[in-house]
Length: 252
Image 1 (spheres, rainbow, N blue to C red):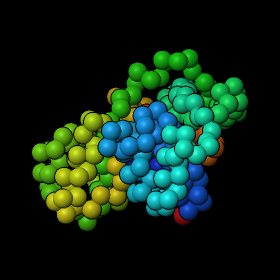
Image 2: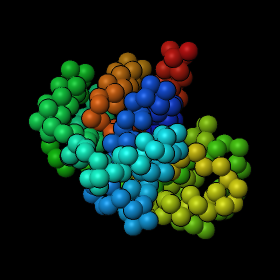
Image 3: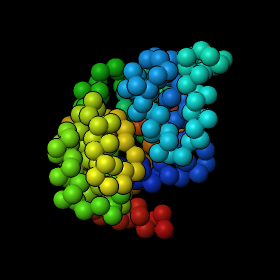
């Protein structure tokens, strides 16, 4: 399992914790609203909305809550006009960060992102300085109970590019345009799908082997991720087995 896979596993666990606090719900509802505003309220003709709708359902957001978000996006109900911004930055150890934000106040969001980074060993980068190191991919997360060969056989017939072991689950990657059809094919084959999404993956990773730097990095990402306007944080960090073990011991 690659270091970046372990990073993704950490984020998966954090996502579950966020859901318990309700923070993930708020982020997902905002994503649904923006998708509906940008492409219309019909999931059949708006692939982004369809993906966000499914992501919200995967994380147990109530159907009526999702439908109200769609109506706010289309103007049927009063809503806030959110702006989508991606900030680029560096974390301790020279690790690249992409920060996706939905905000109703661009100036406030920019100032707060700059402050969070600078106060925690990072820095905000110029547009384009980091984004080239990442590529958008579709991701389907499959329950560990499924056999890897079964996941791979079905996946490769429906656009899958890779199947990775993420410890608690299998992660299947594909072109973003294939994520919904790939998910449907896996489910039709009786394979339990936990969630599907479109995400940013690094083309190259930066190894971090020092526990102190890794801890500082993870604390910074937590602070950014907890910001109300932040929808997701992507990193190109690769954490060593030793660092992962030491961080795991601290969590316990």
